[in-house]
Amino acid sequence: VEVEADWRPSAHFALSTTAAFSRNRIDEWTQFYDVYDADFTWSGRRSVLHKDVDPLMSPSVLVSQSVVWTPTSRFSAGALVRHTGRAFLDNTADRAFSVASRNIVDANVSWSLNDLMRVSLSVGNVFDAQAAWTSGYSYRYFMEEERTGTAYFFPEATRNATLLFDFTL
Image (cartoon, rainbow, N blue to C red; front, side, top):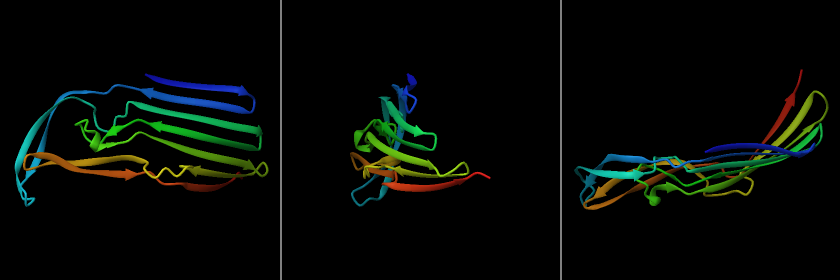
């Protein structure tokens, strides 16, 4: 289910929401794992049948909410809150190999100096969420009889800012 809604409670405020809610499943699939002995010497492969699992990097919830305040035609300020639900790094639905749900807040202000120049400041990840992993992958294997592995994550930037000068010629 996807939803998009915009609302202007006044001439100076605008709210916008987008949301996607889904249930994504893989009925059945076989993954082949490397097998290592106690000395971490490769000793072969082993297959494991997985049933009714979440596909990798398919969060069931994605929501963004923005608010923009425009008190004059020359000034605006806004914020965007993004929520992303848990996403798995592989097709095993193992929570140890997943990206946790997260909330990130971005903000911006914009000021027209005159009809030809505008200055904008955007701040991403305003509250400096340190564990904002956006994606990643896993390497799963068997260490003798125990299935294990390593999760690798791609981090999102910590707090960051962009200053932009627009000139119209």
